Amino acid sequence: MSSTLRVRFCRNLQSLMMFDPFVHRRFCRNLSSSSTNGRRLSVAYHIVPQCLSFTDLCLLQPLSRLLTLLPGNSIVVTNNSVSGFAVDGVLVTEPDLFLSSQMCL
Image (cartoon, rainbow, N blue to C red; front, side, top):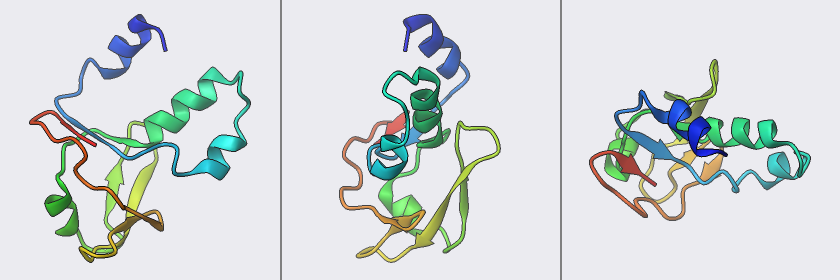
């Protein structure tokens, strides 16, 4: 992604949280390796425009939706237990890899 596009893509964000976009390997494998637009859509789907720590996420009720940067799409909390927290049916295995006031991975 060019620096111009990156700035335009993120300029209005105050904070963000990113789920690993490579967890959905089946989805990513179906994208053409030359499909830059497809990769951008995949990354946009995995970014939530708010910063929530794992503790914050665990407070969300199952079936809560987190809007993503991909318009009209959201990530769904499918399990909110600390030992089995999952979004879109995918277990979160390494929460809070990086935390700051503006970004959570």
